Length: 227
Image (tube, rainbow, N blue to C red):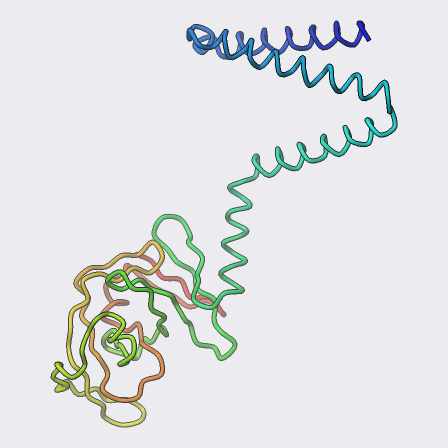
């Protein structure tokens, strides 16, 4: 047992020496020696308990040690690849959650088409989360009546005098200005929009937003929006 304790002390000494050599500036900190002593005490206590446990039940101790080493290895690997795992998580959420999108760099958002071929996107409009269909055929960002009410807009106070030609004929909307529209990393202010008077099932992210971007493109089932 004393040989194990001596080996643990030598390993602790070697670790402290390595840290002092690698981080000389931290060694000059007056709190560093105290922290090393504190860590050494814990190391000795845990190491001693492990040795006693190993002598009493060596088979069980080895299995438990292997399990803890495996857990520590997984944690270390996860921490080392945390950025890659975060990117993978964003990619999976973009593919599985409609409208979620995947941020690319600091200024782009990549959307995946829904099963019907349309692109849906979640946007934060004046502090409220809304869902839009991306529509390059719509001249303005267009809100349906429900989403307008969610923004605190009373449709009964609007003047629906702006005609819009659609595939279903002419509909009328009321022009408004949205203070801020945020889609992923893309944030635009003072965006021209309209509230649709008809029965519009989805709000539309139209050209009054898209035309202010540096670019957007469709590649297969991916739509990329660039700030």
